Amino acid sequence: MRKSFAGITPDRLVKQKELLEKYFSATMVYCFEEIESYQRQRLIKKRVAFILLNRQMFIPTLLLDLKEFGAGPTIKKETLGAMSQLLVLYHLQKESIENIPLGKITKMLPVSAMSISRAISELVTSGICKLEGTKTKVIHFLYEKKELWAVSLPLLNSPVKRKIYFDDLPESLPLMISGEAALEHYSNLSSGGDKRYAISVTQYHVLKKLDTTPEINLHDGEFNIEIWNYDPGILSNSGIVDPLSLYLSLKDDEDERIQMSLDEMIGNIKW
Image 1 (spheres, rainbow, N blue to C red):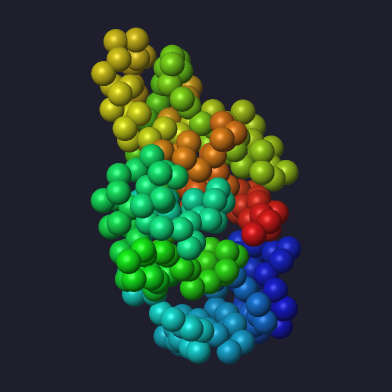
Image 2 (image 1 turned 90 degrees about the vertical axis):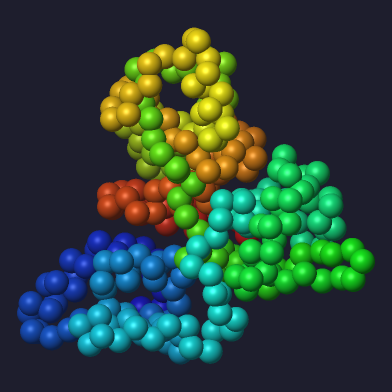
């Protein structure tokens, strides 16, 4: 039994599992005292059997998938919309939106009041937060920040809506560094000259209308431009996309270097 997931990767566990199962001719099940929600999701995706004491049991060969018994409120919705996700990530990284009147939240983010209202309703429905107050409504999250990230993670999506490519970078466009180059900033990864940038859907529509825009390629090019469902600039002031959105954009990458660096990045966050 391991006390935690620290210092290992799902790919390494898969290799160990295959060797041990071949040697003992039996199903290998890992047992943990502690493991984050996002790490569990990666083990499940790779069909690695595990038991999290008093929390969860996943043994696919026996058709067992018992989840989160006694773990508190159950989140009902499968995934969050882009605006709801943006609110959660904003609260976790930029500025708390807890106990702030909803009208003031609309002044904190460049988003319409109606979009904010719908997003908060979705968060309440999902079991992440609740609304308090009578005349003046304020939002109250049901979890502290580190736990909120872990609980919300299964509901969060990659912000990348689509990708396009250029041989030359467009001029006068607020590009934010993304991909491996951004991960290099937050971890010890060597990006190898990755040239990936992020823009919002709105910025993409503006880009298409400019006469000075280079030819857009759909399959390959010198520069990879990710079109995000929300403006990456809202969550970062550094010219580099925020770490939590970056994690969501890369979490399904099968490169073990990427996965180890993502774990390092998340581990370095001061919640």
